[in-house]
Length: 159
Image 1 (tube, rainbow, N blue to C red):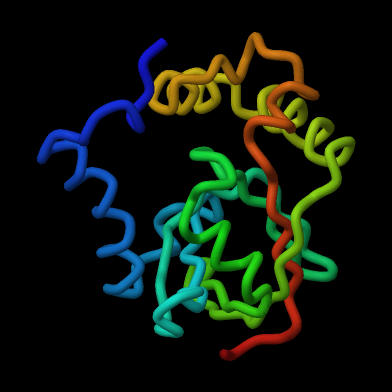
Image 2: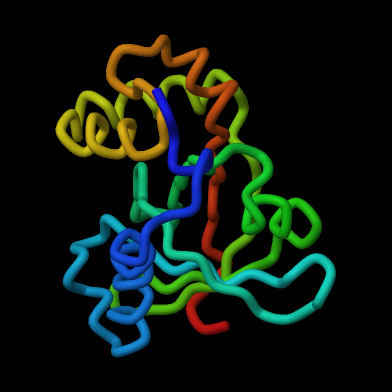
């Protein structure tokens, strides 16, 4: 199955990917009902703040913790930036949190991938087609090896 990373996205697809970021900038992130967040991280080379809109695999409210998937693997800029500097911030809904990032252990990632597919089978099929991975039919351990999960643990509000 061809993936989006095999070719440049069309103008329409690029606009669709940028739409959520615009809504967050306009303080309308609440429309995503917790399914998306904006990760504010530091560029590993530039030292400048960068932002990435990511889908939430799981959110645990106490303590506030978000799990996000690096769908493009360990080569994702935001993933590599968090490895260089794990302190970051995120915007979820209308609130901003300071967070510390860590990569989930393979067993934890496999369990959460399986949980996500059970909870969101339609989204898993659509996203899987977009990224060229069978999220529904693939073994969770294989998914965990191919698509790392990042744990974003809140250190407090603000940032």
